[in-house]
Amino acid sequence: MDLVVPGSAQVVSGNKKLGRIAYFTWAVCLVLLVLTGLTALVNRAFVISIFTNPIVLVVLSVLVPLIFVGWGLLILDAWRLGMPTRLARKNKGANLAPVMSRTGAAISGALSLLLAFVMFTAAWFSFSILSSASSMIGTIFTGGGNAQTNAGRYNILLLGGDAGADREGLRPDTVMVASIDANTGKTVLFSLPRNLQHVPFPESSPLYKLYPPPENYWCYDSRPTDPCMLNSIYTEAENHKDLFKGVKWPGVEATKGAVEETLGLKINYWAMIDMRGFEKLIDALGGIRLDVGRRIPIGSHTGKKGVYGYIEPGKDQLLNGFQALWFARSREGSSDYDRMQRQQCVINAMVKQLDPGTVLTNFQAIADASSKVVATDLPADQISTMLELALQVKKHKLKSVSFVPPLIETYAPDLELIRQTVKDEIAKSEATAKPKASQSASSQPAEQQPAEQPSAEQQPAEAQPAAPASEAQPAEASPSASKDDSKTLDSVCSVS
Image (cartoon, rainbow, N blue to C red):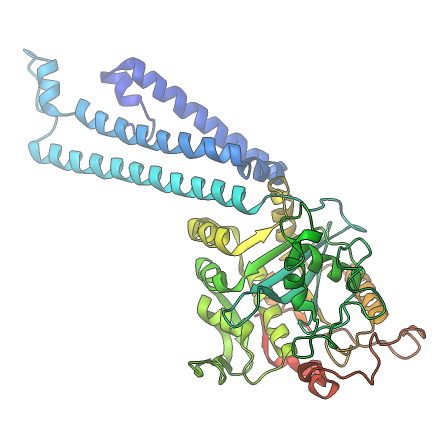
């Protein structure tokens, strides 16, 4: 009886007061669940905002386990109340037939113990999930971003940080901006190469005076073996923390300003993933599925282990965290631009394949992994807005634009061309008709090719390269090294 209606056995033949308390608690919980479900149908964002509130999660992490423990104890008490020996003592002198045999009582007891164990397990499981959620939200979502949309869009900076033993400081080799329509969820993913030079800083940046126009972020004359490139801005700012007073993440703040100035977009939020813990996050998600177009080496011929494995080509391959990490970062036998394409594929796969069911069944692992590898300035009270937006994003193709040769030259980028391309691609995205509702999101592969270079008539006549052609260039950024035909990169990978 107590399994269906907690307290019912106690009301019939036990402590009636205890039974009524259990009745009332069960009724309140049932009403709250129904109201929550109905509210979610009308205003899902409101419900999400409640259950992502750290205070609510702390309260629930105490109350929910207590309810399950109490339910389990009521089940055990109900078995005690129904034992034949107890009934016989209660009705002493009455001519009563045995309620059940000893075997039946043993089976009943075993089932009661099993059900109670299920309730106690549910208590522990609910405590683990709710406490992990509370800890993750409190640790990661510390706030500081801008919730105001820019021309009806949210622009989110995505950084993939790598602080290997052979590197000086952390360098975000993955730099992307997801520009998302706040109403429809249609998204354009802009990727900037790590070796982009002459990156401009806004006048508000503390680094602006150190690297003013027209050269911008450029130091080849003083550091020919390690010239100023986009991925070294993070370390540069961390080395000048005194210029960023009161800023928790100087490296991110400086990189964000440089990306804003380069693309002509205002960033709402940023998120940075430590690539060393990236594989844990992918494993927590259950892996990702990709169409791998060619063999990707694991390791490097210049490393201690050399090349010690490969990710083989094939359709709809399930990659675990280790494989996904190497797929996204492998440089052996490929260019930076090829690697950017693979990183876009990984992002697209995560967006398309992440669903509420996956999050729920793997929540604790995801929460534990996320708290170790992710940092962001998204505040907790905006989680519901972003989750709602993420569901809209899944409905559309993810348009990818890579600023690589031949569109631009990384050693002398045409900033006006970059900004105009950003405007054009966003305009195209907003003008494109909405996909049919019957079309499955999983059947819409991302358009992963750089935007076409405008014709000569479309290019601004006054746009000039940021660096004279006569300047010496580092080997990896030389024109000859960057003549990578990005249109061939579609064969590298895709998402089914």
